[in-house]
Image 1 (cartoon, protein in one colour):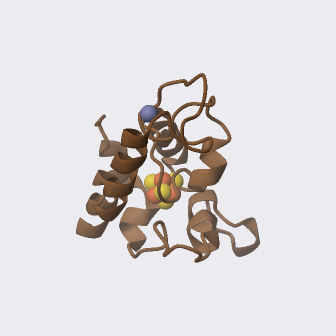
Image 2 (tube, helix red, strand yellow):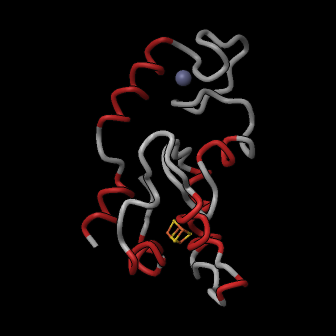
Length: 124
Ligand code: SF4
Ligand SMILES: [Zn+2]
């Protein structure tokens, strides 16, 4: 896991809460509005938004809002690689997301655990 010290300056650290990891089916609108700022309300974007997005893309963080983008939106920026291990695959084994059954299982297991980013936000 790469350095995440930039997160200390994130607005999510000041505000706290679960907006960035909403329950499945819940809106990410509030989190994205905080990350991206809202000119109508006179709020500025998060000062570490660029680092946050870069970190999420580099680490293929597959859950939550990072850098003002949902996981789905971030995935659209990445090359077609396994959702879990990041390897480019020739023929998707399971749908179009994973290179193998084991990667799918690992992703499922991780979903039940706390990602390092989520744990840090909670601790703030
Ligand atoms: S851009 Fe990243 S660090 Fe900033 S508020 Fe959003 S999730 Fe938090
Ligand atoms: Zn894989």
